[in-house]
Image 1 (cartoon, one colour):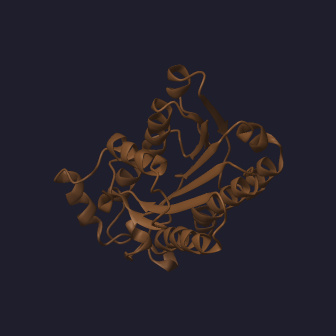
Image 2 (cartoon, rainbow, N blue to C red; image 1 turned 45 degrees about the vertical axis):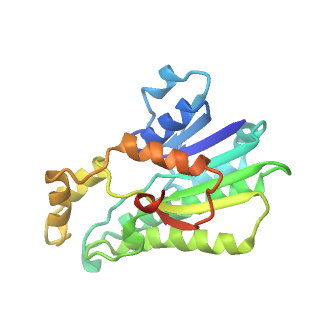
Length: 244
C-alpha cells in the first residue's frame, strides 16, 4: 500500500497533487493551515487532512513527537512525502524585508520540509520504501532581485536533497524538483507586487499574458507520475520540464 503526505494541499498545486495521487488509489494525508473542502467528499475512504501551521515550529515539533505519524504510516509499504507548502514573501530588497516574514518563510519553506523528511525517514520500517519530493523552484538555481529569501530557501531544498543522496540510506529516495511556472495564487501575488520590490515582474506578467503558465492539474499529474516512477531519485535535483 502506498500512503502519501502532501503539504499545502488546500489549494493550488498542492490540491492538484493530492487529487492526482488519490486518483491513483493512493491514501493521502494533507497538511495545511486551511482545509480542502472538495477532496473529502470525493475520496472519503482515502483522504484525511490535518490543520497545522507548518511555519509554527513548536506546533510541528509537537505533532511529529506524538504517535500520530506512526499511526498513519503503520500499514504503508511505500511512503511518499511531497513537501509542497511554501511562500514567496517577503518580496523586496533586504532593507524592506520584515524580519517576521523572513522567519515565516524560512520556517515554512525549509525547516518544516526538513523536519518532516527526517521524521518519515526515522520511522521507515525494514522492507518498506520512503520517497521524499521537495517542490523546489528555478529560483533555487537562478537568482532574482527581490527574491533573496525565496531563492535561498529553494536552494536549501536542492542542497538538502544532494546531501541526503550521499548518505546512501537504505530504502530512501529523494528529489528536489522545480515544477516550472504554474498558474496559481502565488503567480497572481507576484504579478501584484510593485516594481520597486520586484523589478523583473514584467517577465511574469508576460507569461500570464502570453499563455506561458502551466495548469496546476497538468503539472500535478506529471509530478505524481515522476514520484511513483521506478526511476525516481536517480536525479537528486531535477526540473520537471526536462524529464522525459
